[in-house]
Amino acid sequence: MLSVIAGPDSRDRHSLPAAGFDWLNALDGDLKGLRVAYSPDWGYAAVDPQVRRVVDDTVRVFERDLGCNVEIAHPGWSDPFDAFWAIVAMDTDLKGMRAMAAQWGKEMSPHLVAFLNHPWTAEDFTNAMVTRKSVVNKMWRFMTDYDLLLTPTLTVPPFPVHCQGPEKTDGRMVAPTQWLSFTYPINLTGQPAASVPAGFTNDGLPIGLQIVGRHLDDQLVLRASAAFERARPWRNTLPPLLKELGLVQ
Image 1: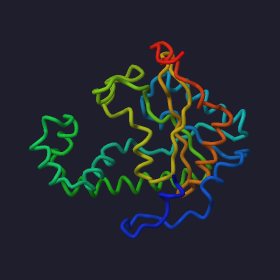
Image 2: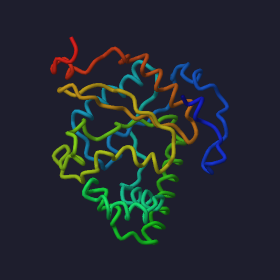
Image 3: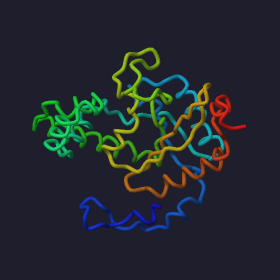
Image 4: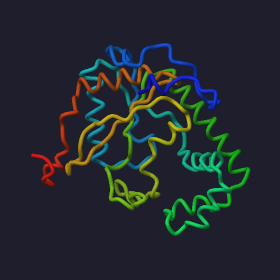
């Protein structure tokens, strides 16, 4: 799929030149000797104990079975949540979306309507861009010491449909969007990242591991994802929850 969709497109000023490697061949090779950082919580995020347990165990695979040198480390930024959503608003057809919310707001999620109707200012947007530059610079400096960065994909296991997010995680009251803490900073930096199955909660719900590479190093992220899958095969592992519900034998 990546071999088809990657590469330059004159309709997108952000598109990149074609990769200088074969996407399928990128899956080959080992990870021996790589320097790997593991940030279980960015240094500030509340993380569900079951998520931490599963991902801690998964990270040990990189050291024990794949030959990486792993250490706990954090890039060192403060939570850039507000900047991320300001950038989303800045890149949105805000006028058009507000008109849509005025007509169809009762059919839309309340948090989306509130986001669209927030009184955004030019200063909100310029502050967000400055924060983004700071996050990118912190990550660039951080990744000079590491080949890969590992984190949980989300802070909590899956939660009920029609819920914006848990209001409490690991005993802490949190914003309903806090469960996204690990993903939006990587959206800000634009670095390659993959989410791979890491394991299951006691109730059989899936937990993910996020593998982040240096800027434009998609090749290593794919190699690390494939190496982990070989070390911890999962494609024939069904969540225990499916058996409990009688959906599989």
